[in-house]
Length: 123
Image (cartoon, rainbow, N blue to C red; front, side):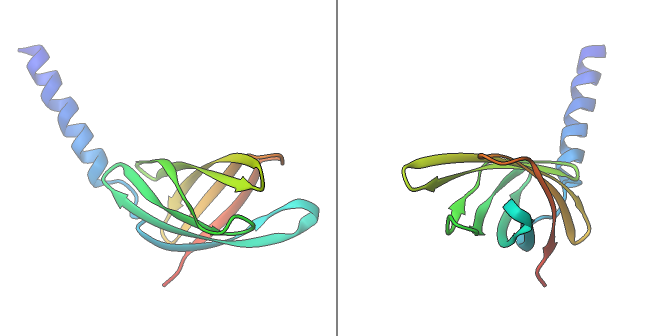
């Protein structure tokens, strides 16, 4: 009996988590810091489907690139982007916290230091 109750409670918590997942579907823009204090505008077109996240990233030097491994857990999102720069392939990992019409991102990977920035929803 205890195992059945535990299973039911676990399922309900998973469903509740999906219901309260952050609403990130839409277009977001950010000024992303780069080398030597320069910033570049990046646009995130995101689509949430329960706890799965898909979409594209555009701007910077790589044109439009599909995001991969997208996940949503409550107010936290994460995904990766692999960009081709000539003969080189660079993978970036983005993690963010959604608060209303802003996402506080941290980007890691590539050749530089981790970068933090805020993306705002385009209305």
